[in-house]
Length: 322
Image (cartoon, rainbow, N blue to C red; front, side, top):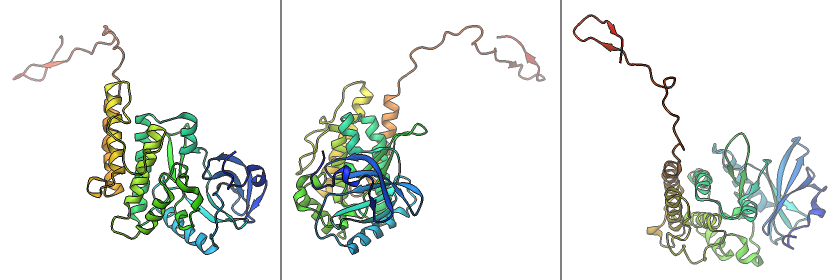
């Protein structure tokens, strides 16, 4: 079950991590991380603890740098930015990160169980994702390792589906070379390029392309080719009403622009992408709204009362009648 470079659940559950996190039970496991519900002894509350695959070269100073970046993001007011509480090492081999606990699952687990997302659903959560990343970019922080495991989706009765973006700062930790193409939505060489581009004028393009690949995977159920965008606007087209088809086409064009390798044809910022998401969301809401199936017959009970008329040029005397 899961990646051999991750510790098995039976080894982790019941263990005390970093002398303060008591692991109570598993939440989910993918090839790229194992998530657990844990109890923070010092803070007296539940937390989400995620263990990453084994890798060499991770030092405590690298963990402190990662936590410093994560804390900078956690101070931002956007509610869709997941708050990182700690970053460290398990058995000096497995990096771990601790987040505020919330019920839900990663988008990787959601799509594995339910398959591709409908366009309207993806537009609604995609805008939350883009807005959160835009807030981080405005503060001068790129993610550097966007993948479906780092988007946590809550489904609560009291509100619509709610996305939190996790994993800020973890790109500071050395990548494990043998992860290869499974290390994210693009091969590990692209991740290294993303780290090198961080201070370049167009360094945010790495996040934008990885974000587009996440959207593509959610819409189609598969990863795009690492060399570029989908072949045509009909790639993600859906059946159903004309409104739903229009929403799918608009979403497909948005994803293609994220994945464009040519910078002049691609999005230049997450805010620009967020603005297109907002327009797409409004359009989808308008086009997919269904008219009432039937109107109740107008009866004497439902009929509006006769309007009163005023005789012009005369004193204001109400004249009764139709």
